[in-house]
Amino acid sequence: MRKMVSLLFLFIFLIGFNLQVEAANTNILEKEQIELQISETYQIEILNEIDYAKIEYFSENSEVAEVSGTGLITAKEIGSTMVTIVCDGNEATLYVSVFKKASYLNLLTESDVTLTEGEEYKILASTDGSKPITYISENENIASVSKDGFITANNYGQTNVDLNIDGINKCISVNVKGKIEELILTKNNFNIPLGQIEQIEIVSNLEGNAINYISNNEEVARVSEDGIISTHKVGSAVIILMIDKKMVANCNVDVVEVPITEIILKNESVNLVVGDTYQIEYTYKPNNATTNVTFKSLNEDICTVSESGEIRAFAFGKATIEIIADDIKETLEVNVSSKAEPKNNKGLIIGLSVGMILILIITISVLIYLKKRKKSNNLK
Image (cartoon, rainbow, N blue to C red; front, side):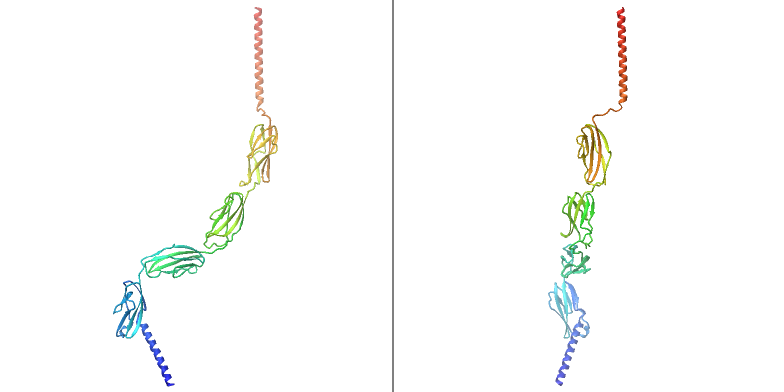
């Protein structure tokens, strides 16, 4: 029993001693790890050096860093090594990393990237430094970055990823757009009068995505990059909305005529002579109407009318011309005479009558004069 107790006390003593040694090793050095540039030096600092009779220094790899008898470390080439310090039987270890300081940091990728949620992107950069480049995202909720420079787009938004090596910094702007499978529009069917325009309106949040609008029938309807539909011909078309070459919505467009609601004639009746022509003059409402106006003669044996509304008189009589637009109809009455009646003939007739009377008086006077002269000659 006493033997067991003695062994137990010995065991406890040894543990306590080892802990003291470890504590002494821990407290020997001011630093346990250092980084040096090539050719840079570092003087090892020993805590409580006055308590130690002799200090020895050993480098595990003198090609990387060598240590003098006074504890001066000189960095030789890129790498790492351990320097062991022995102080009066106690040992301590100093880890030494030797690196080449970077003089430049160049981005080999774009400084402004746009990603879709869930997409990854590898940052490419070059440097002459031996240390690894560090990457830090300013907002990991939007985009995170690994130690190897892989960016992962997490949520819609914008953030920056900073690159650093030896105090040299670069920055990449990261724009994350939402992953959209389908867009919701305010309406998917349009009925647009010819010549008018309409705007496609989107209910969904685009989350940074750009939309490409495409019409499958540009002769009927075209669409601008802002989603404005313009109409060019009566008919049907489909407008397709695409994001990243993927269709996310579409809408149907029917282009229809604008009907005429009223026809206004300049004259409701005209008088013509056989052989005359007359162009029908009219206006209509609304002035943006697109339906066609047609003309029809109900009495083609008297006069005809062309597609452009020109009347040509052929024979004496009366005729009716119809002007038609959809369900709207107006009529023009045409009176055709066989020949033109002289205008202001009364003065002409009086003038002719007076002239004939004068001629007659002169003629009679001349005849009387000649008769008298002949009789006078016979008496002689």
